[in-house]
Length: 278
Ligand code: NAP
Image (cartoon, rainbow, N blue to C red; front, side):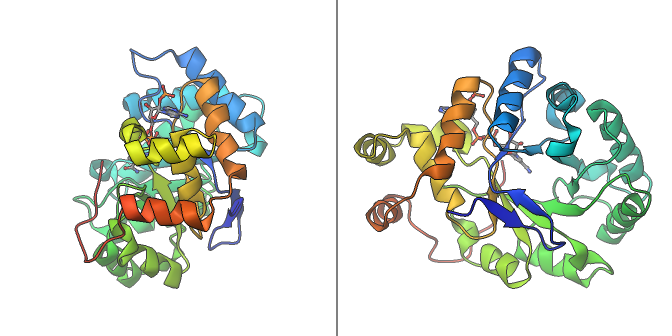
């Protein structure tokens, strides 16, 4: 298992981070959510993934609460919505995110998915934001192989640090050509929804393997993403109990027999399919 991932710019980050989708929504409890994130930071999962989209900025406010007084130890990832990602809209969106997060610079700023604005305009805005110190690096999310190829044709496009994609035991389509493309071009991968938003945890085979190994199904699912080269896994958990359980997956070594069993139940792709998105 890789405990850190080195981004193309040389920055080393933990391979396990903390998701925040649905945090800061009215049904959630922002104080409990911030405490869960703090516990994650205490345990070394210092990558926090958020987005302007989540709870319309509410998740970024929860993050602000969680990182108070400890900015230096955290690596913050946030995202601009595609319809905001014009030349000027990207700058505005970033400034709004910075304000909600209560910080001066975002460590990694992503285009949430390919959208209506010319990619070149978004990339120019990312470069400007980098120049003025409002972001330290940028990347993309939900980009399929053809989108990455297009990005590589845009001036400055190869400065992209990561592609954040849906990747878990149930969603292995990216192994066909997108993951190999990212490895070949040195782009890191952030695996989102590693638990398939909890749906994966009902799988019978996964549960029996977990029982056999005296682990939880969530731990096996997270450990599986963590054994992939160059992958940062960002499960979301809004309780301290779930955070602790998930972070313990860092020290799990899946044996060949475990991986064979998982491959049998969750088959790798046999052909190219469309990139799955949640
Ligand atoms: P996920 O991490 O696969 O699953 C989250 C769900 O699993 C929550 O309901 C959580 O419950 C539950 N859970 C967490 N740990 C558990 C455990 N140990 N045992 C049982 N249940 C557990 O789904 P996700 O939130 O969609 O994905 C993770 C993060 O990836 C997001 O939060 C977001 O930051 C990012 N993401 C990015 C995109 C994109 O387009 N770029 C799309 C989706 C997600 P509790 O909250 O109650 O703990």
